[in-house]
Length: 550
Image (cartoon, rainbow, N blue to C red):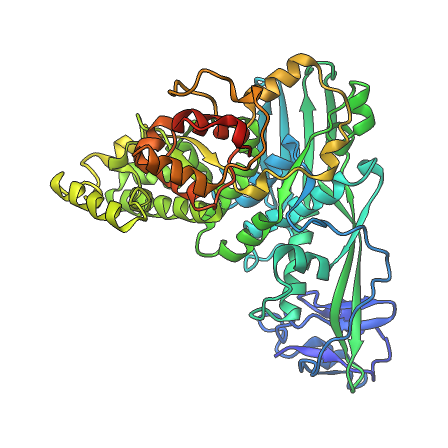
């Protein structure tokens, strides 16, 4: 049974030092007991210390406050809100942010080094083993009942988004409230968590984030000379202000929180706009989709492996179109090296891991990250069943003919995996992941490039941009770029042209080097095609490029 302090408190402070769970907090002369930490001193003392030591009768059994909480006005002015366009926000995407995100999301499966009895360390080599990046977490005060999970990485990304909005983040700070966090994470409309539970989770996650220390030994890279950053906080908690509301008995009830956070010294070298112009530092940022944060908060418990992959791919897909990710690499990110090695030795664990991996890929596919399987190393015979079923046409007549043909071939579509499927999967690759539409959105900050790129860098960026490449397709000899465009190329136009030419969705997909499900989604208007895909469709269907545009 938890307790609360009534208005009869005389402020003797006797209960604060005696509380074994540190549940009693004093702020501006107001006393408050965290009901989620108070356990009636069970396991420490035979009776509650606040009750036995209080000269009066201030501690009383806890009762949840009745009625609705009043709106809290932050006493500290908060920073401008994020995600004003409702889709995405610029955020710091340097290697420090990426590795810290991996450290948080994969904490339970990483091979961490122990330093003493209360610290764990994660080290990443950089610059061809010429430098290193080290993240250290102090475990003192972190209860076993509240370990670091993948949701903590979401707050880390939100902090990176706030930091990207500061001119000199290493000497500035940002302020936010619990209500802002709830709106970013999609918790503002959830009814399954009480207000007190949400506030306690936020306090726990932010405390864990601010315990992380980062040290960097960076070698020379281009114009930027090598530098070293001594161990310091990744994020520094400057202040946490609690907002209380009193009930009829004068007991304080926590109704809101406000935090002030200062980014660490690492931002001087990786989020320095002025230093980037002078060639002395880096300025690296990207776009953070709001849907990613809300997807992680919704599916982390049942599909934690898929959410780890989602956070990892947020950074990985920025490195170019052709990822060519191997299945073992994805499994290590999602489940850890230890579980992968166990699957090599145990047949039952191997089967469970394959089922879990295929289910997690389906979750990513539903989210919008559609995997494109390598036809050579990842043929349809070892692909997940959900991926094979996407080849079934939506048209009833075409679907009937499809199943008849499949039955004549021995029911290959729904057949069980071939013998030795595990060995084939260990050699399989995914060429790339097709990105959701909100991952392509350009944020306002992208127009303010800190430095003008050279011609060689622009060519490298264009070469690695996530757009489709051209292929040897039949079509008119004219270049579609040379013609003016006046009419949008709609999915209905593509479907009509395909049927007029007598081409099936599967055949068109083969001509384009795409999957049949991609063609079906384009025709149904569920996908937006790029300029390069438009040109390829025009060539494949012999359309007049003068009449169509993206």
